[in-house]
Image 1 (tube, rainbow, N blue to C red):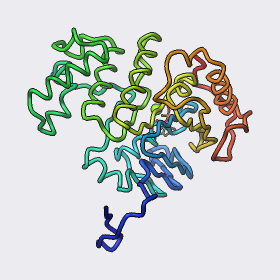
Image 2 (tube, rainbow, N blue to C red):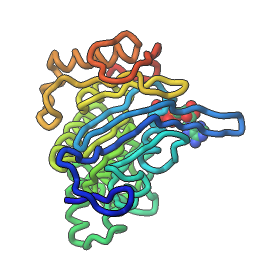
Image 3 (cartoon, rainbow, N blue to C red):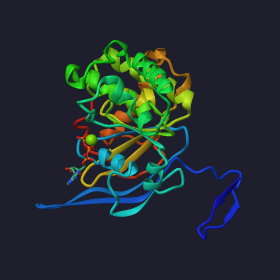
Image 4 (cartoon, helix red, strand yellow):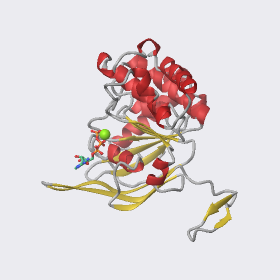
Length: 294
Ligand SMILES: Nc1ncnc2c1ncn2[C@@H]1O[C@H](COP(=O)(O)OP(=O)(O)OP(=O)(O)O)[C@@H](O)[C@H]1O
Ligand SMILES: [Mg+2]
């Protein structure tokens, strides 16, 4: 195998040098607004390995969505570097590496549920038969098989969110960017979707960057939890989940002491009291506002 070097020629790829999925190095984001500058992210450095599940957690306004939007190439950083599978975010977007499910469902109101889910497949010209089969499979998975012909405004907020999740998975993306995708779901559906998400990740080896306000959700899903602090948003601590691998996790974990220990570790980090388990970052948050303990 070869990879292009900076001069444009090719050189043999070193054995151990598989590209990271996401590499953020000293990333800064300052928004200029009519009322002045907003320093949304400061000196954010983070490496996400291929196949890894990483959650971002932190108080409202600490820059979680901003970081996701930078990775997704929906905004440009004002400082630092960002790469996705060794490429620029713009290149990764054009290579269709992403599946995106963000805070707002972002469905097209004039299309049916099935046509919303199948949109990425249609845009990328998969055959009608393949598309139908995949859409049926996805709608079954999110529990909306009976709603294929409805329109988004005929669904509840949680159901719309499930349509958006199904759409983000349509093309089995290499990198899933999910910003509070389960926020509008009832607790039972939310747990079911969490388990489904881990199953899908195991099946597709997808890398996931996931934003949540729920500590238990972050713990259940993640290999590592990134705790962020606000004003300006920065990484306070990165905590390794000392649990079984994500593809072996089942609902039983939710009642295990190892799970509660990790919840405590994240909770204490959010409240600025931790030290164990952290692998990166230095600052400490003094508030856990906007973060759920459920
Ligand atoms: N387009 C924008 N223009 C100006 N300021 C912005 C813009 N987008 C975000 N911000 C500011 O950047 C900061 C971080 O916002 P962001 O949406 O990333 O927070 P968050 O951690 O996702 O919060 P929440 O948990 O409430 O979703 C906030 O102070 C916000 O007001
Ligand atoms: Mg947000």
